[in-house]
Every structure is written in C-alpha cells, then in structure tokens.
Length: 173
Image (cartoon, rainbow, N blue to C red; front, top):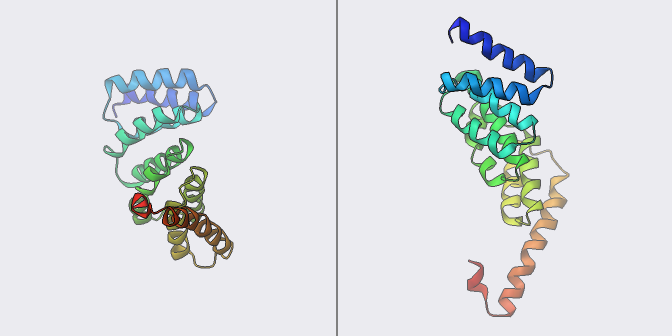
C-alpha cells in the first residue's frame, strides 16, 4: 500500500474503531475504488458492514477478500466470513468453511455448536446432528450434547415413521 493512500485507509479504520461506521464505510469504499484488490481493506469494509448489521453485503466483501489474502489476514477473513454466515442464518455456508478454519487452527467448539444451533432453528435436524457429531469428534467431553442429539434424532424419526405409514418413504430420499 503506497504511503499517501495508506493514510486514507488508516483514517477509515480509525473512524470505524470510534463507531462512525457510515463515514468509515464511505471512506473505505472510496479507498477501494483505487485499490480493489486490497484484501485487508476488503475485510475491513466487510467488518464495518457487519457492525452495521448489513451481513449479506459484508459476506460479499469477505468473499472477495478471501481470494486476495493469505496468512494471518486470511485467517481473520475466514473467521469473519463464518460469523457473517451465522448472522445471516446460512449455516450450510459456514459448514463449508470447516476445513479451512480447522487447517488454520481457528475452528472452535463454540462456533461449531452455534452452527448446529442455526440448523436447529431452521428445522434442519439432519445437518444439526451431523454438525454436533463433528463437534463431539473435536471435543468428546461435551456431555451436554448427548441429550440434545437424542432429542434431534427423535424429531427426525417422526417424519420417517409417518411417511412409512403413509407409503411415502421414497419422498424422503
């Protein structure tokens, strides 16, 4: 980043850190017009949007930043993207980040369990069970998950039994 442009970028970051998100976003977007491949700035713009509860727009910036960053900055981008997917109730997209997050050592049990909870809130018991089982593989001592898994399994069995009774078992496949 050239020094004269870095000042504009740093001012935008400062504005965001002081809670002036609208002004920070305008300045960051102006900076990005001249530096569209600056992954760190794309991540920061996404973070500003996330703080403004504009998650879907934030996701777009994080996705762009992901392809332009590496190292520690990429780790931040992946974490931010996962959080934005969760905030926008897109747990299936968040699950798609597991491998990258785990490889970077930033996948934590809390995140995995919140993703499972997002599936539950959507009524998607199957994916919720899969994510909770994944969570147990990462940390087997989570005794609280076992009764939750049993409840989810029971909820999942009911539609299968009803379909079987009505002769519509093929509809569930």
